[in-house]
Length: 217
Image 1 (cartoon, helix red, strand yellow):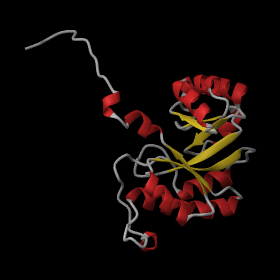
Image 2 (tube, rainbow, N blue to C red):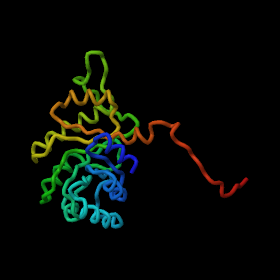
Image 3 (cartoon, one colour):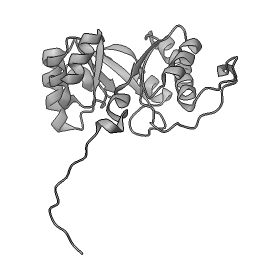
Image 4 (cartoon, rainbow, N blue to C red):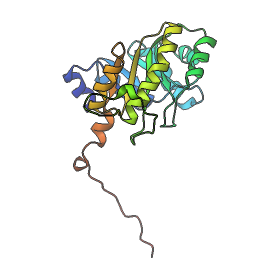
């Protein structure tokens, strides 16, 4: 709720939450759109009921992440708007380009697909150098930028084939890197998720406490 109130005052159009279990709270505290980062899957039966309830009441404002062949399942649960998550070195959720293409071709749906979602690792990933990303001052693009650039090039092909927007929602991209990425793909809409910087950004803001239950020699 604190994040949502601050975002509301800043005029932010969208906030992201980790799981669907947080969506009701965010939707109640925030008037804009809420992106749920944990991908939708019918396998998680405990979450499926929550998904249906959230989407029944707030389908227009809830953006669902899809990281597998679940477009039809998400629509059946009430989803209206989705983002497709690409596989990254985070190795958590995500689809390859071929899997995205297969999911889009193999499923009849009436969903609004709003673009690509990328969850990059906090530690800089390894990625092949892209000479065209070097700028006049000799600065070379970081691994995060190279990962994004590679994926955006692939997404361009999928978007063109299926009539989807050139838009990406991405985490863990620094401000300097964002400028380089924007110059590389000036026709793409880039949305940056900065939550990690908020909750991991200042160690002095954290206070750890605990209770000793037992001491064993």
